[in-house]
Image (cartoon, rainbow, N blue to C red; front, side):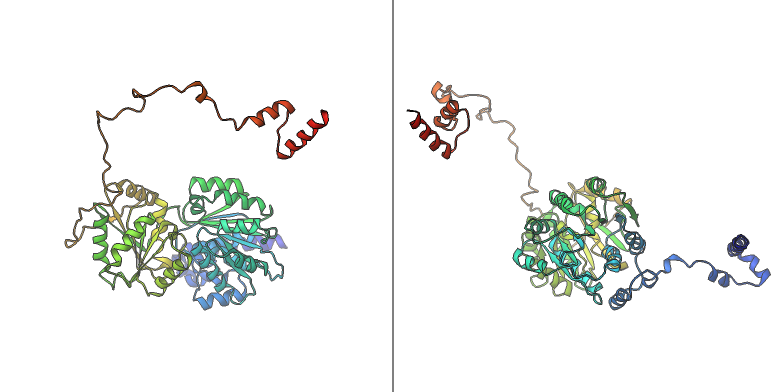
Length: 497
């Protein structure tokens, strides 16, 4: 009886698919195409958060935030993370990777009163710690969850006290987490899941040693989760060393830019001409109402700030690693609220920062590594909104621009420089040509000796061995001597007499 039912079901299913793929035949049997479609699986593009296996508390939190439809990475990662397997996710910046791993984790995490944390999230910068903690707290509005962020640059004793009160989720930078673990205040023996966000930046900042030490003190039975917009060879090597048969989720090819970001470029001769162009662009306050300017180095960031501060004193702020923690957080908050419309930042700050409605991203220099460019422009056009990016390129940086275009497999549209922008002849110390001495007849070669040179006398050729006493004692007693041994040997020598 059961076999007949299975055969009948297969035949009926075949007929439905045949009729759906040939809608002309439907006119003969008076069945509409919409009626057939109701019997078939719905389009996966119409999936909402309510279709996922989320709890009522998480659904309510998402409703409060105004989110209804998951992004592709959030939809595809949910079931894989829920399965407990190791996960490596590749998706473009601004596609909601934080919620992609936190939604399934919060769904599985049950209420507990234990002191030790069960979920560890590692991020490269202090600003990212604050941001991730804020996002998790928004999702856990209706869940009793204890969350804390720890990072360097602040009083460690305050963080020790917060950790000792008990945690469920801890978000941390690798250096401070390892300090807390070594001090035995933080116990990692209960960690069930570890999330590594922006791991390539951690490796670039020299955190590999701390990461490997952290992996050594974590339980072996754990779930490893990693999400990033780019994948480098060094990251791939670390995955092969620490992850166990990871399942890779790739929504887009590594290095693929978002289609809703319009990219433009300018060819300029030097730094001060770039400053003149910036002043011209930023004078349009309606268009450039929330502009993020990226530079490669802290020194150049300070130099640019000094130049623009003269004209935009009350509208500009700056963040980089030499600024204090409070100054950095205050600058980001002022920019986020719209109190300042211009923010200058270095590459480290480009990773993961989620600031809404950034109108433009301007790359003052063309980054040497194409991945850095991808993360920079990802600060605009977030959450499927329109964004604009500009990249300013000198002749020396042309090779970097070609590498970026090769990674993205597309050309960046080059714009003509406005007529009213002055081309400057002034050069920065880094741009000034280095003077090389071709020939100096009065300069003596390094291997040539002068007339006053003489060989050392025999007594001056001796090597300092640290005093004769240790050598003589070692010969006599055939063992290394300390201060205590010296006293002991003197007493024994007297007894022998």
